[in-house]
Image (cartoon, rainbow, N blue to C red):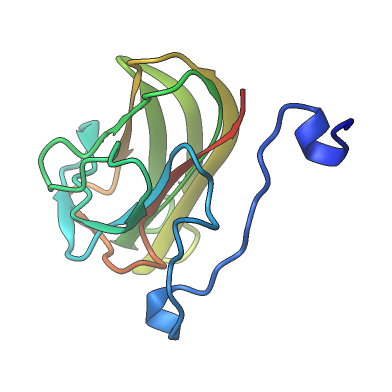
Length: 173
């Protein structure tokens, strides 16, 4: 039998779910069979000005293959199977000054592979920076999220599942 659609191109199917916070349940049997996770900040994290700082994720919505450390210390994703991965992160910086910027990097081992910058246009407003992309990742690689800003003092990364999160899913071989 010949495969059709995305599976014929070596891609895995994507499923949409209602989160537990919305009254639904995560069914790992319906998600990607190999790996994927969704991690987020449950509490604020102070980020000093002008310093690249690793985001310390402290909660998981789900982690299919136990390859994400949401322990508030390591906070990285370990690639356990080589393939194509969809990577996305969103960071909300709290109350930046006018003309301040926030940078979000996704690091593969020691080098930045995805980068987004947002600039504040309103003094005291929260600023959100998003980055997403698909990359081919090899077995044993580690992904982390690193942020920085130029506000002139410590700023918090806003907490909650919708404000600051990191997710990675394997989408192809």
